[in-house]
Length: 294
Image 1: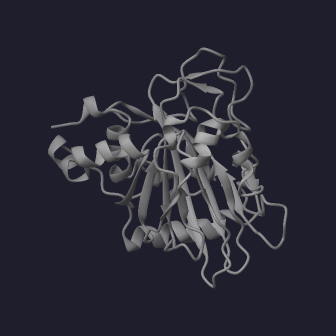
Image 2: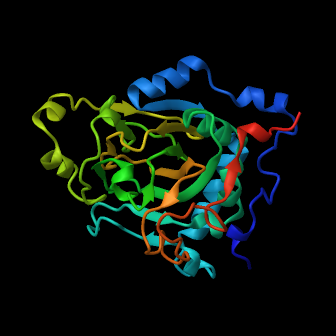
C-alpha cells in the first residue's frame, strides 16, 4: 500500500481528462459568475460529480473513516468527533487524498481545477489540503462561524480558495453551508474553535460587521459544489434531521504562495522554511492555464 501523495496525476479513470484546450472549454464558468464571486465572496451550485463519482467517493469515505485502516497514520488530522460532545458529532479529517484513490483523483477533476483557476484570477493552482466534514443523522454537530484564512496564516500571501462539495444532498434541515455575503471585505478576524459555540466569532466583530451579519443558506444537491473566498465568514448548523450530511473540501492556493513559518505546515509534512515557495510532494501544481494542450 502506497502514500498516494507521491503521484501528482490521476491514477484511476474516475475523471476524464481534457486533452486539448478546446476540451477544457465546457468546464469554464462565465464572466458573470466570476463577478458574482468577486462581489459576494462565494459561487455556489457548480456541478462537479456524476452519480458514479459520488458513489466511488462515498465508498472511499466509509473506508477511510475506519481508525483501523492500514494507512491511517498518513492523516494530517483525524477527529472522530471534533466537537467533543457525543450528542453533536462532527467527523473531520485532513489528508485522506494520501489514502484513497477516489479522494486522490478528485483533486484532478477538471471541473474543479478550471473553476479554481478562474476564481484565483486565471492563475496556476496548487493543492493546499483536503478535509472531510460528516454530520450523522439526528445528532450531527455544527461548524462555528469562521474565516478559513484565520487558520491558514502560516502561508502567505492570502491567495487561497475553498471548494465545498456534498456527497449527500445538503439542506437547511441537515446543516448545509451558510455564507455571509460580502464578509470577505471585513479583513481578517480572530479564529474561534471550529466545532465550538456557533456564535463564538461574534465577540471578535465590530458593531458595523454585526449589523451586516446576514447569513444565507446554501443548499446543494449531492455532487454540486460551492467555492468561497478565504475571508468569507461561513459556518453550518447542527444536523438533527433523519438524513446524514457528508461532504469533502478541497483547499487550494495560487502558485507562488510561500511558507510563513519554520514549523510543519501540516502534521507529518516536512518543514518548508519561512519565505520559501510552497511546493513538492504535498503541495502539487494541479492546474496551469498557460499550459493547456491544443
